[in-house]
Length: 310
Ligand code: XMP
Image (cartoon, rainbow, N blue to C red; front, top):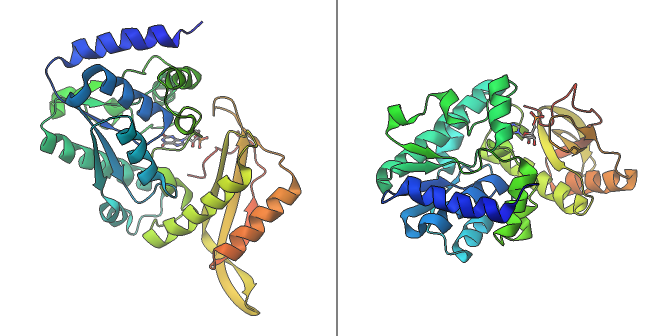
């Protein structure tokens, strides 16, 4: 049986010993893994750690403000980096899913590298958990937080990596979050991919297209709150469809809603949520987002689909 209290105790000792008199940065997205890793290191070394929130323009509605507020409330030394324009710049003209992932990853690490240099740190904290390592080793998915695979290691950059959660699975990370007294919005947070909304804007990622999927996501999340499903989100398609707005024919955007049940994200089932609920979501999305004329529901399990579209 996993003992969260004991884990925290050992982990704090270990981090203190590893870090010594050095300085650390921790990239924190507000997800449960990176927040727990950040808070653990903060508890262990205090002012020697700086949490870095990189705003890539692809976060959910209100997320940047929320994450920075939580970190500051917990007394964590926090730096906010507005990199929105830079991220949209690297997505220009890119429509291939793997190319987009690569562009995101490179921009993310070059931004973090810049901050690391400015802050003169020696350690980078990562919220890597056991499943990330397993999936990467198996070749299922190149998790953007497994540094070795993208050629970032201590030899090349001169930074050491702290991965305090590398031996834990997600349910254990949540137990640690509760034990640390982090708020429910963090400990019970829905999984959200590292490359964020870029995986849910099919085709080219622009600020305008990200704004459409952000609004649709907000509607889906509001309407599905309390359903207890594993992941609920919206996806913006790269093609268009005919519809009618203000009595006129328009050629507009298509949104797909995806709501799945899962335990570990390795397999997932399309959730059989009440039809009235789906109708309400569709009505809200097509009326509150002027450019959207069609709303679809994804009824495919994983496998053969994956949870995300890209
Ligand atoms: P898939 O789409 O592979 O997703 O069925 C399984 C789970 O992983 C999340 N996901 C990611 N998380 N970086 C992440 O941190 C990624 O590149 C990534 N791709 C997918 C997805 O949201 C789901 O929970």
